[in-house]
Image 1: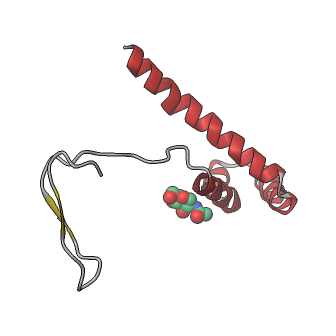
Image 2 (image 1 turned 135 degrees about the vertical axis):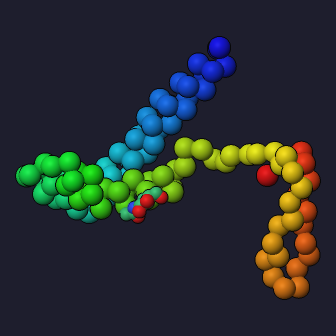
Length: 105
Ligand SMILES: *[C@@H]1O[C@H](CO)[C@@H](O)[C@H](O)[C@H]1NC(C)=O
């Protein structure tokens, strides 16, 4: 139960607050981005509809994506293979790689 609470806390709370901190930092240190973002938000808030807020903030969406790309909240996700799997060849002269059950990916 303690472990689940810990995961719930860091998965839901810490990741969002950390991502938001990096986003705000990026916007605060880039006045051109901040101004363009403010203009978009001001424009949408003149007639705030569900559609406008959900689909009309393309620049905000791009800024959030860029911030998450620069500062990913999850550095990596590892998984263990449960079945054998042959990776497709990246090049025609490359060697085949087989992932076996228990291999970390
Ligand atoms: C932001 O990322 C989401 C999820 O990958 C994607 O659906 C959306 O198109 C991206 N937005 C922009 C503006 O690139």
